[in-house]
Length: 93
Image 1 (cartoon, rainbow, N blue to C red):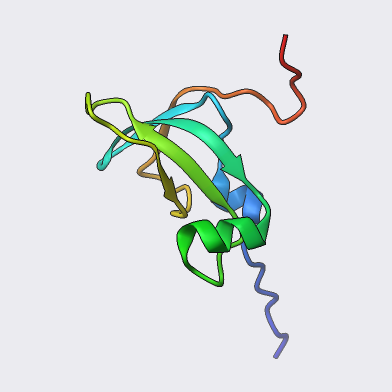
Image 2: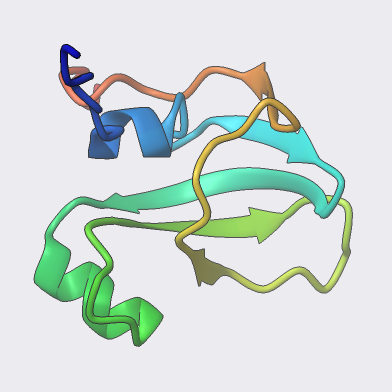
């Protein structure tokens, strides 16, 4: 019997297309990505979860009182992108 190799998702797979400026929607709301945090120590502190590898700070654009908050949920097939964000390599004008 040949053992199967299991590959775990990378942080980039879990984050998906959520870059600053992106807008995506799912059953919880429509969210604008404000900040993408890829430093595991900062993400763990922000999410109060030692295992966090990244965090995204979003604002729900469907709520007039939507306050920015941090999330650590992975990108799934129920999420869909409405507007692409800026690439990590894009420089501000």
